[in-house]
Image (tube, rainbow, N blue to C red):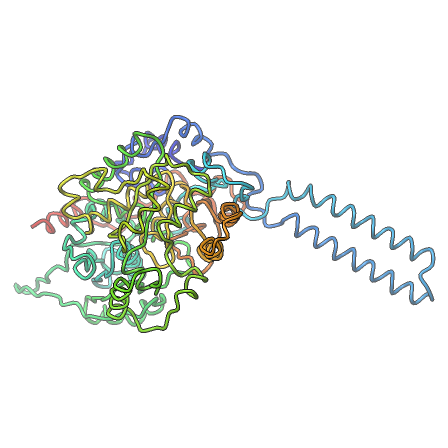
Length: 597
């Protein structure tokens, strides 16, 4: 079924120990998360299905489809027909030869139509798996079809290690919520690589969003972060003092506000010039400050190494997450839903009309204080899919897909706007609802359920759940990052409702037109992707879908899709040693010790 767990567990016992040897392919996905086999297993039947991961689909990468061939042949047949007609006119009439020619063309077209059916079965088209003709709930509990692809973010071309002397120090301040900060960290590492700079451990502007001052070292495993990226960039905890002629001098970073989605050229010119002049630069704010679409697969793979391997939450957060997952899974499969029915997102979307006057007043006030002024009409917004799904709509979608009311659901959400009035219909449809507080009412979680730790735990539980369903994935960094992480973590099933296509169906139901409602919902959902590899199309983000850059095939049709060699770590290690770099482990330890003081 395309899930790499069997391969992961097999490789973790191989000659490279994943506890101390870096692997960027499927073999270290679990280790990069700091998880045990128990937390990632679903069932013995599931593990049996996982053994299919190494099976390649024949013709998965072929670019010629049966339809293409038919169109080509028909075009040639029509050209022949046109030739015969012209020839007939020149001779003064169609005659017997003309009739024979027409009959011949008819036979050719008939043969082409017959052959097209055969070619449609035998010639591969897109690498994406064929969409199912009906929704099978039991299959959704398993991972999506991998199409022969597996996650891999290791370098596949010449990738020199960071030089002993860099061009200076790079400081960044990552603003926004946990997952917006996460993508900013990935961009910071890439920016440091581009400029050949030493990266100062990124600053998390937690106070502006969560009112939580945990910082990078309070959320992420710093030692793991530095060790994982030692082949890519130099990382320090803070800018060191300069000692010269018996005097100590502090380096003050020159502050710059980078443009949004800045191209690589900006970093190689403006930013690098300032860095060389001042020895250090401070980029703030640093949310969405490096272009996502970069025509360099190795740079994109570095982003994946950061996002899916280097950024590992601290052990106590991982332990809390594993505990919740174990409790949820002890009773079978479970689904996680990011129920983005919260004040900030509703105010951003401009979806007010379903609330009472007092609630609308609160939403309008929040929007005026936090977002640019814009005239938004609810009916228009909803019709184009710009409003978050209500809890009841989420329940109706799941019921139409034939999930029954015994389905266990984990809700990852902040405080739902409108409260129980909106949750009650959903709870009636699916009574087995949980969140991190109800599953594990520990003191640590209850004290920071709305902070970075609570968000981190929600992230991990959603990542490890059997099915993940975002209800408003467009502008939600939490949902977008999870979709990308689950894709990389073995094409784990996701349910992504098409809000625009579903809107007229829900509106008709509200007007009393209930006949055929569930069938109409199923038809829409059948057209969506359930977590398999698929082409990234704007506005889908690279962080939502890193295919194909961060995936590979054992038997590819294209050389660029080939998996890196098994000894890729040895190659990177030898190159690192060749530059005469001091022992990286001692550097990591000194950085961590310095942060703890």
